[in-house]
Amino acid sequence: MKFIHTILSGMLCLLLLSCSSDEEQKAFHLQGTWMLESVSYWDEVVEQYDQEDYTRLRIYDDTCYYECEVMAAPSGKMFIPSGAEHYTLIERGPDDYLYLQSDETHPLTVRDDTTMIIQEMGRKYAWKVCHAYDDEAVAKIKGFVQSDLASGSEASHRYVFSYAERDLEASNHSLTYGLVLIAVAFLAAMNYMYIMYRKKKRIELELRRIEQEREALPKPVREALSNVEEQFHQTPFYLDLRQKITRGESLSQEEWQQIEESFKSVYPRFNTTLLTLRNMSPLELQVCQLLKLGATPSEIATVLCKDKSSISTIRSRLYKKVFGTKGSSREWDDFILSL
Image 1 (tube, rainbow, N blue to C red):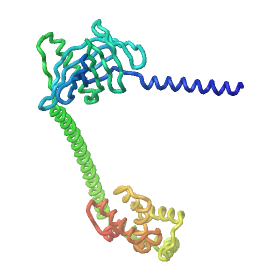
Image 2: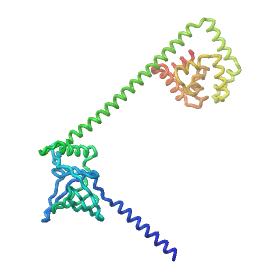
Image 3: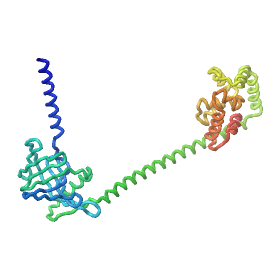
Image 4: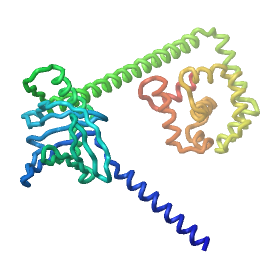
């Protein structure tokens, strides 16, 4: 029995919560923009308002509304301010309210989620929620009414809200954004071209310096460097290395480290010169080192486990990036052997 009582209590709570939720969902909000849909007279005559040609508009704040007539104009809408009034809304029951305005009380009934009925002087005014105006347009319309009230003039003022003007303004904004983007892209492109120009000039100066240093070396120094290279080619390490390269065997990490150490004494400026000209990947540097050791492109491809076409692409790409112009892989090989 106690168990059944607990279940019934739980179901009752759920029912109350559901009802409370439904009431919250059906809460009526007067704030916003409303357009007059129709007026019903005491003799059951109903006057419909065409929202495209002529109607009345009300914009409700928390305690005040702004009203104006809306008429069709050649380029948009014409607004004729009617006035502004303070109001108070009193709830009497579900969808039933008292609407206080200018010390007068009018019944207000909510027909559905989009329509309310206000009774005034024996007439029923049906107002429908309007979503035709965005926040910017609503602010302008309220400004029309406030400006008209502030003028104190009894003559009716007319304000035109031009669609053409609004479209032109939007178009101008889009054009401005487009021009800004084009300017940013142009500046970015110019900056990139300037960076590439500076890089190219730096490489040209470096290559000119290398050539001048090579030409300025005294003959005894050139002969000494040549002797060091010849002696290196007779060392057991080089001979064993050449045999491995010829057989297409991969080189161990220790052997690559030995190559690095040997280059420091035999070709002391080889690695630094290449890395000064361009930041190379480990693979690109290994290709250049094997070329300097006299390996053929086919042997390099086998040792590095790459296609011969890939090795050819690496060499021609390096030439273009260093010299700034298209060149063959063979031209890159000649440059490497000259270092």
